[in-house]
Image 1: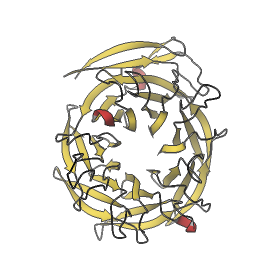
Image 2 (image 1 turned 180 degrees about the horizontal axis):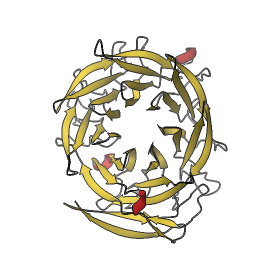
Image 3 (image 1 turned 180 degrees about the vertical axis):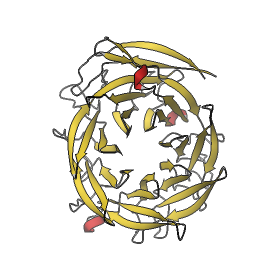
Length: 436
């Protein structure tokens, strides 16, 4: 099959948005993913997860059909990649207690043969949008629900399942409206671990910082890598404020608070903490509203990069798109794996108003982050919102475009294949064609 993508070859190091010799990248579009049974505008692509040759895409408004009692119950779709690089749908996931309005699929993640799906508006054990998370297992190519999760202290309106992250035998699940520390809607996250004896996922800990603030919605986003979990929000203390991200560390059988990821020069109302990810000792946090009306940079967006030394997190870089666009919402979604950062900019006008775009960055041997490319699929059109969700693992990037009901898979070539070009800060537009 022959596929093509527009990609911008752009300026490299962007600690302050400046241009250095650019990096020419042949970013292959390997696949376009879509549900086999769409039922109206289901918002397929609103959430994504990726691990190896497995991908999961959420469609929380499925089936979006007027008069259907199950409307907006939600669904998620698992895709697998074969040895020839061909992606195909491997399973459609729905809740065994499917009910309209649950928004199952609003958050998703996958690790190997295990998938986790959040349904923050599900009327679980405590009723009234207490929320639930669902575990699915792949057994011989068949994906089946194996467990429904809800914490022991879940209460009505907690919206458990606001965010989900899974790695190995551990999962972190956000509950953005739980009343941690007796503060209304302060939010928290919960850790679950898989117990091989009982073959069940068991609640291990509630993650909430010593500092609490009402209406903060902590847990609206979460991330996990090994023994470190990140829990964050873009509205600490309520709407109109900035966000916070807290780290938690597992050691000697206990989870403890292990520092805050705080920018050196935060900007008011930049939505710091709207999305985050962690890989090893490096974490990224998106602030898609970075930029002010006063300086003409309204809602351009920014990515903050942090590195860890023990329990101390320090900002080591701040990334901008080299074609920084007013209102582009660069960093609405972010992810990191190894030396690759993927960034979604869902309102960038790359292929029409609010079409969206993907930006890729790579860390070089000196530890500096360089922008590799801006990727825009050929079939992207206005209002597709590419970059609403993004995931990266190895050389593979998965990006959702929920208004187009699609998700795109792109491949990043090995660093040794890069060709250096001196093109300045804004580079040029190229068209790359690949055959798969």
